[in-house]
View (cartoon, rainbow, N blue to C red):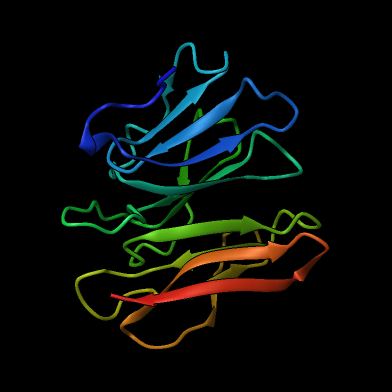
Length: 181
């Protein structure tokens, strides 16, 4: 059965599923905030409506604590019309409250990865604006849960990082993809 919006403006960008309870998951909508279900999609509750941005590109659930979810704002599916974001958000209470953790000039976040050995280590693929140069683009890393960010990879003011994946057998091995738009 179809659980997603039927209109073009309701594009689903990402999911974050609780591995300990598969009936609980979060849905990132490219132009419609974040929604949460606790009953396997029978009903959904909006949980991100009051944060000054509506476009969500990606989600990442902490593998060590399912109440901690990171959200990258800004649609990561480039097309004619696109919603911009204002950085990376984090909830530590299962979506009841969210805090902007920075990277406000990233415009679009492509993907977020959390080191399974240390939840304070987080990688963010920042795409930057798809229509112009500059901003916060590249691969960013925090080692203190988002209090501070360091750009650990960049190519140019026109090229962003759109994906980041940590190798399952060695999280120190990082794979990224980049794009120039």
